[in-house]
Length: 325
Image (cartoon, rainbow, N blue to C red):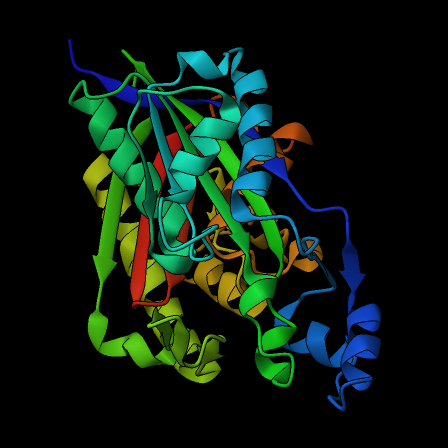
């Protein structure tokens, strides 16, 4: 019989420190950077975000999200035979955050590795896990998106530092005889490297280049709206479904304008758009699983619903996953 993969549990975690726009604006004003709640909300839809404490890493946030997902799936950590962590803010250069998280879960032996596709990272990681389960390489996978983007923000640049937050989201993906993930679609175009990047590296004990995030917001917006629609339609075509078959659209929570534009292009009412960017900011690879878990636990998304997950990120990367929950 054909093997499929299904999400059987979701989880998320946000660091305790919550900064409203007003609180962030006050901190920035002390550094000579002017912004306001109104300015941020009008341009992004963001009202608050969470920042991790200085001694908290991506693996710490991911661990809590993973525990919540395991509990929701009714599994123990020892049941897991694959761990994939999507992150652009790893604990260290190596080993992978996935290996560090595996140890914190108290398990060993199963493959564990990171996927780096920035804000598309969770979509990429979920696609890889789905493929490994379908080929019999794994039966129960933890797929996690975890970020501490506050560590790479330039707080002298108000156009970027107000956008991002820290957090983690996770799902348990299990082998199944009935379809869960229906179709996936991944892409990248490296000629757009410069529009969203952290152009620094470590060499000889020093940081070469710039270790802080740089973004051309207008260029990202123009690319994002087009490729998100194309990828969503590609996944629908692979599954033989139509726009109207989607119960919920869960895009990467980057900017409310991009999210609204994508929903309109897919002829979806805004009531079917999952929005958490207002409270979380842009948590990069964590944003999709965070939004999914919040919506599942609130009862908005229910078992049997058809979901479209999609994201765009630095690279330039983009992709989508169509699934039945």
